[in-house]
Structure formats: structure tokens, C-alpha cells
Image (tube, rainbow, N blue to C red; front, side):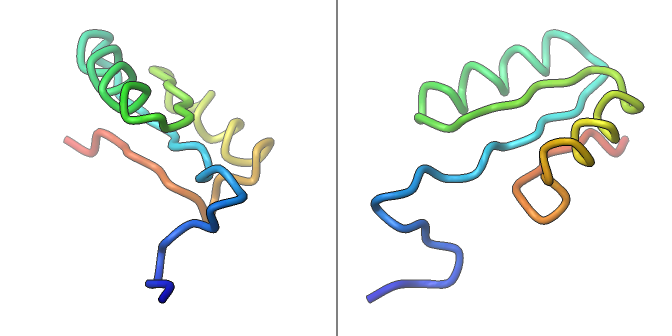
Length: 68
């Protein structure tokens, strides 16, 4: 049985874009997610993050952003 959001076993999960202006938070999230075998795209600059979303088609994929 396949659940919504579950990835196909033959395909890796899409990369997770992490955007945070605090380098220590960015590094901790990156390391934690990589240890869980996720492909991580860490970015500290919001303008670079927007470009990355456009270039990698991450608009509909996984993202983690610092909103506060």
C-alpha cells in the first residue's frame, strides 16, 4: 500500500532546500537530514534560495525555511 507523500522505492526522495540566515542552524539541520539519508540543499542567502528554486525545480518539492 502506498501512502500520499511516500516515495517510490526505486527513486530517491527529492532534495530538501533549507534556507536559514544562521549558519549554525543551517549546519545542524543539514547534518541531521544528511544522516537520515536525505539530499540537502543548504542556503543562507534568500536571493540565492529563490534562484535555486527556479533552477532545480524545487518549487513543488521539499523546503524548510526560517520564517522568523
